[in-house]
Amino acid sequence: MPKCVYEALVVGAGICGLSTLYHLQRLGCHSLALVEQFQPGHTRGSSHGTSRITRSSYDKDVYVELMQVAHHLEWPRL
Image (cartoon, rainbow, N blue to C red; front, side):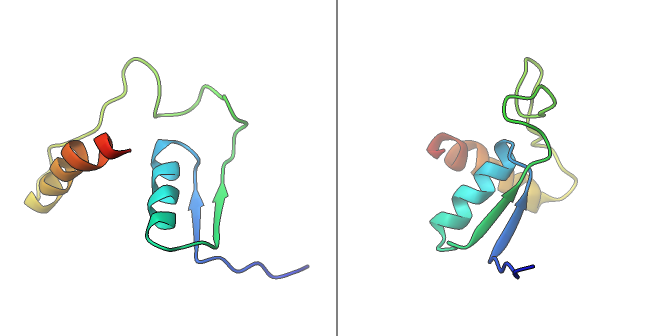
């Protein structure tokens, strides 16, 4: 069996996995692999539906600050 070498392996093709893949490519990684366990269009995803939220309160300030960056800069850019 041939050996496959990737700079990164992203597990999950939901919004988080695809966003990770996008940013890895943007940062210069070109040898990437994406693995998803379900077929496209499945109903088991956590990134769609009427009750999906992102968490922005944490017990450590650094995570709160990261979420502020994500909400105000990164999500609008995506």
